[in-house]
Length: 302
Length: 205
Image 1: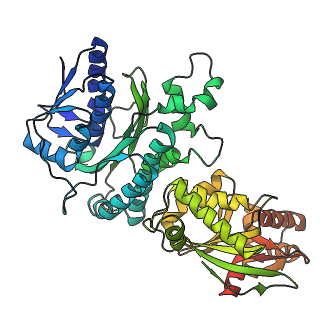
Image 2: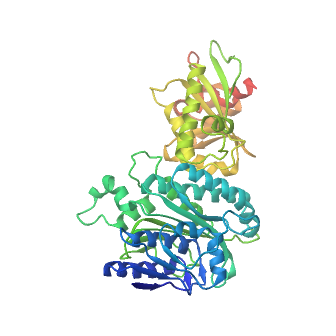
Image 3: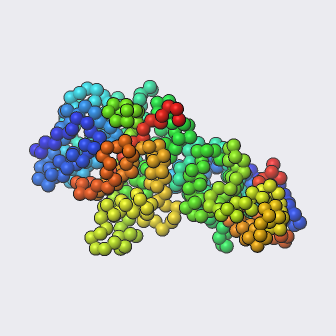
C-alpha cells in the first residue's frame, strides 16, 4: 500500500504535490491510499482535482482508497458540495460520509460538483448558477448585474470546452470564499472545470502538429496555441473564441485563469498572484484538461 | 414569429417584414426548458428555425432578431445563431434575399454579438438599449459615416449621402455598396437609392 498524505490545504497550488506523489506511486505499481485525515481546507480545484487524480490512479486495477478528513466541518463541506457521490465511483472510501442529497435552501454553495457529459448539462449549470449565483455575485462580490450574467457565460464556455474537445466527461464546481491572506481578505469565486479526455495536444495535433519540428509538438506548445492564439482543430473561424473571451473577461475583472493539460500549465497571472508563472512544464502527467479560474470581488465603489 | 403585410418603398420594390422573437423561437424549436441562449446546438437550432421561416416567407425579407427576453447569451450560441446566420445570407448562393436587424440588445448581449461578428468580419444593424439604432461589428470609418448618414436620411441615393457627408461620391458609393453586400442597408434594384433597415422596420410597425 502506498500512502499519499494530502496537504492541509487542497487547492490548485497543492494539487501538483498530490499529482506528483500519485505518479510515483503509480510507477511503483502499488495500491494507493490518499490520506485526507489532516485536510483542513479544500476548494473546487482541490475537490475536482482529487476526482481526476483518483480516476487516473485507478487505471484498470483496484480502486484507490480515500481516507476522509477527521475534521467534521471539512466532511460536512464536502457533503454539501456533493463530492462524495462522485468520489464513491472512483475511490474506496474509508469512513462513512454524511449523506445530505440535494441543495439546501440557504446553502452558501454556488455550484456543487456537477458532471458534464452533454450540452444539456451545460444548460443545467447555467440555469442553476443564474438561479443561485446572481445574488451572491452582486451582493457578496459586488459585481454589477451585467457582469454577473457574464459569469454564467464563462461557465457555459468553459464547460462546453469539455464536450467539444475532451471526448470524455468531466466535472465542474464553483464556490466563493473569503481569502484571509491574499488580496487583503477579499472574497473570491473559484471555478474548477476538469476532464480526463484527450487533452489539448491530441485535440489539436491533426491540424497543428505538422507546423512544429519533430518533438516540438508538446503539451506546452498545444496550450500556447489554444490559450494564447485561440487555435482549435476546427477550420471554422468562429471556433476557439471561448477560451479567448474567458481570458478577456477574467483579465477585466483582475482574476486568474489557468489551463493544465498533460504535463504543462499555462496561465494569465494577475499582479496579486505571487506564483507569477505563466507557463509551467515537466508537471506530472494527467490526461485531459484542468481549468482553474479565480475571480476576486470588485471594489465596492465600482 | 409574426409577419406583417407586404410594404413598399420606392417604385415596385416590396419587402415582407418579419419579426422573430428569439426567446419564443428557442422555446419552440429547441426545448421549452431553455430560456438562456447557450451552447452551439441551441444556436444551430435557432439558426435553422430562422432560416426555415425565411424560406417560408419568400424572397426578400427583413428578419428582426429580438433579444428582449434573452438573459444569457454565450459566444458559442451567438456564433451559430447570429454570425453564421448573417454569413449564410451574404454569399451569392444565399437561399433568399434576407436582411437582419437585432432589437432589444442590452449591454450584456453586446460582448458576444460584437465578438462573433468580428471573428467573421461581419456587421449587423441593432437597436441597443440607450443607444438606439447602431451598427455593430467590423466596419470601416467610411462605412460607418455612410451608414449614419443614410440612417438619418432613411432613403437616399449615394449622391445624397455623399452631399450630406461632404465626401467623395466614389468613396461614398463604394461604402454603400459594401454595406448593402453586408446586408446592413438595402439597395434598390431599379433606382440609385439605398434604404436604412430601421426605416423598413418603422414602416411595418
